[in-house]
Structures are given as C-alpha cells and as structure tokens.
Length: 104
Image (cartoon, rainbow, N blue to C red; front, side, top):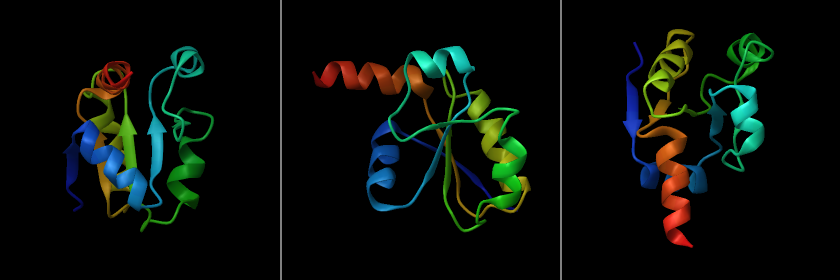
C-alpha cells in the first residue's frame, strides 16, 4: 500500500521544480477560479474518474485543499488506485498563499 506523504510548502515547491507532478486543487470551483497555484488543475467530479483511470500510476500526484486536511483523503484515493507517489500539502492553499504574500 502506498504511503501518503504530507509535505511542506517548501518541499512541494522543490518537487514541482524537479518532477512532472500532477498538482491538484481539491477546493471548490469558485475558490479555484478566484485564486490557485499556477500549475494546479481543479480536481472535481468532472475529471476525477478520468484522472484516476488515465494518468500514469508512476506520475507523482500532489493535492492541496483549503487547510491541508481534505487533501489527505484525496491523496489516499489516488494511492488506493495504485499511484506510487502521493502527496498532501500541509496547510493547504491558505499556507501557500500566505507564503507567497510574505515573499512580496
């Protein structure tokens, strides 16, 4: 069984720079449309089955939500479908956005 790794914002950014990561935003569409990580794709009922069935199980999957709790369950779902590398971002988009604001 694949282990879900909770990773920090810094670890997430480093992984996004070095790997072809499938970055998924599991928040609702309204919040995604308002603001999201530039590399993120919205994960929802409209594409969840397709991503689970058609994405290479070797491709790392990283999920974020609002605060980092719900993303654990979404990452676990990908692991249950046989994905080898599954990550959940600690603190979610709230922490990511806060860090970006502090950088500027």
